[in-house]
Length: 358
Image (cartoon, rainbow, N blue to C red):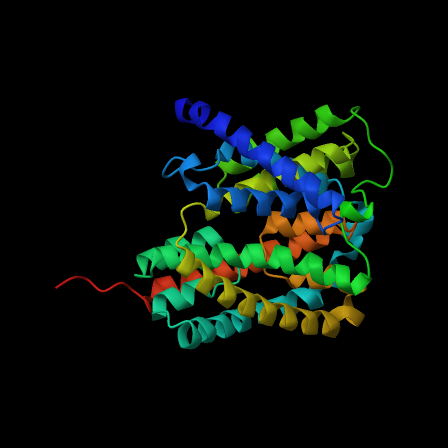
């Protein structure tokens, strides 16, 4: 608690910078402005003024978790009986996703190993199309260069959530997200249901975190909100300003991770990430086109579902487009489960086990 209170003032200051970045991006009609704008401005500030952040400083996870929980509750509220009835129709896309994960892993491994010149363990675990924390933990035990691995995995998420909204904006012919006047609610929402949103978010966060469920901050509130909505126990409607605030906090927490990064390593990892993500998005588009006639889902929903970003960030993109966020989240949770299973098999078999000294 003491460390949390010490880190809170700086976190609030960073969020203020993120708010300025999000507001500027909104004025400039950038796609997904509040998340990307806050991310970019905080990343620039962290890079230009690295001494502002104490060494080893991390954005308070308790703060980030509650805002992710609110996003989870908002997504869960989108799970209606109509969505449940249509779940069997996404089986073809889940099968395609089962093929996507090892294919993306193989493509990325070849890129990082042959073009990037990374050693085998670093190349393999940096190639993972999901499971940022799991890949870093597994890679460390296998003897990978953790600094390179962490930067490469982090940039995967950043690159996806940057390129995808831009690509969709070009596809639609206009900016996507709240910059385009889109709201995540069909009608204006006031303060009447904020207490229900917060209660469901906290309950889901606390209970599922103790159960050690993957992505518990998002999944727990999502499940609780879905139960509350389907049963009619509560109305889960978050006002747009609260969703924008969640984007700013998430974007800020991502942007500050650029502090202290070696510029040369960052540039190399950056262009490798762009090539890697572009290749994965191309495969994702081809698979989305293939299963589109079989699922009844729109092409943009399927493309977002296959895109290898973070669960929370991809859910935000889906929410900003009013593109069935429940379906998107199910796909990304499945992708992460597949990825973690693949990493677990590799770890168990010791294919990249670290050599013992002597």
